[in-house]
Length: 430
Ligand SMILES: *Cc1c(COP(=O)(O)O)cnc(C)c1O
Image (tube, rainbow, N blue to C red; front, side, top):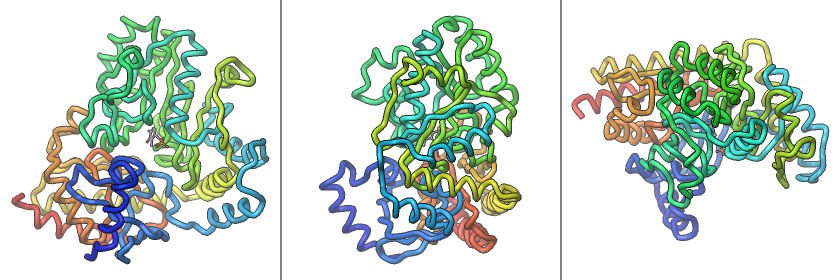
């Protein structure tokens, strides 16, 4: 596979952009690889600067649930584009997207648009603090909630990939109010709430964790969070930036039947354009300026192009049977990858929630960040590089999920499983 153009671009990028990338995991450092530069994408395929074609399972890290350049999304963006790109004033498009979101998630009675998932979680936490009058927060090791100061403790995603426990530049006092507990550990949450409940503004969680690889919630974990936040007058925040409209149209909260106080969204609701949102109970959301005292604003918030892309995307997702066929294709992939590993005698732990998949190179049951970190990272790196060579574009980290889109067809899955079988056979005695 030719890489000349990508290599040349990376050399140049490194001189102008820190690490040559605008988001750390893209650099592929942890898998001892260099990034391929992308020229274009279409459907389930992505094409690099040297003309190589890959089946894309990153999907821009989650948003592209319809695949790339879905005609309905492209048309909606084009039509918004012809009217203007930004007004800094309200539009009907914002109402339409808010309607689609609140209909999909009954816990979300009002919603505020922002420009990224990071902004959504940061603002939701400020709101939780303002509403409860309390300062401390609880999060979980290996969950990623964007890069705002208070949430960069024991975080997942790129922070986990690069092995950074906390980040320089975050003042100690900013994280003193953040308790990070093991995911799925009901006992430790009970103890922490018993001790600090009166100071805890909120518990924020990825209801299905997708930033330490894919880790499902154990029986009773989310219910416990709901019960304890209610008991201690704290808020429960579901960070569904990744899972919202991904694991089901109504998000993980609809799958597990839990009603959070606040929900954070992003990724899919922007249809590939930069969007985030946070919403929840009316009485809480009314605390936000200008209706209430908690301040939060944004020059480009509710941007018309982004709203149009989001509306078009959710409208496609709402169609009857959409998730059934997407999930069936995803199940085929999960089963195929498990079988490929079995055949080669390589121990893996595969998990799936809708069209989000994870495969850890470990024989242990992965229930939290500790157990996720026991995966064989060297083996993952070798697998990643060989899969890329065979035209399969996976996230370059053991701690990231894999996303299937409605553009992936049976042939894509067969080709991917075939590649995995070959690669696993090569890695048999790794
Ligand atoms: C991606 C992600 C974020 C951050 O969103 P950005 O748009 O990258 O700022 C926050 N929370 C979760 C669960 C995510 O997956």
